[in-house]
Image (cartoon, rainbow, N blue to C red; front, side, top):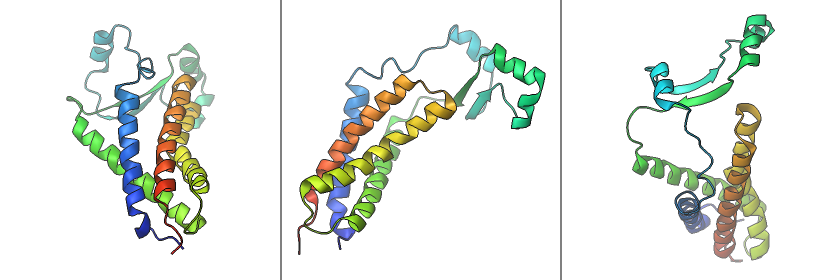
Length: 186
């Protein structure tokens, strides 16, 4: 059986490669630049929002699904706008902190992939088989949550498809690392 300890280098290399690939995807490639739009008359909207504390919000808001049966609530939905938004704490984004958290996340994903693969694949498994299994797990881990966001929170499908493509890139470098560093037969 393959131990998690024998995969420590694959975990680290995969996480580092995803970190680098994601930096290229988000800072160099242009395909995400159209994902976000500014608000029409942003100063007025921000003034109207006032001092909204950090958190997740929806509008029109309902305390329960029962409220949807009320004509006045249904009318608010029919009139629109309908949406979801997140308010972050005020201040300039702390990129160092966010990148650190992202790297820890990539380590957690790589560690989970190592666990699953170590239980499914013996030492000496051929590169392509390791690549297939670990790549599939990585693609699901990095991409499938975006589909849920589209289904439940109206995230544009175009943005979701781009995120799934990004996740495929992350999966390819992850699978390459695990395939390359998979333990041989002892």
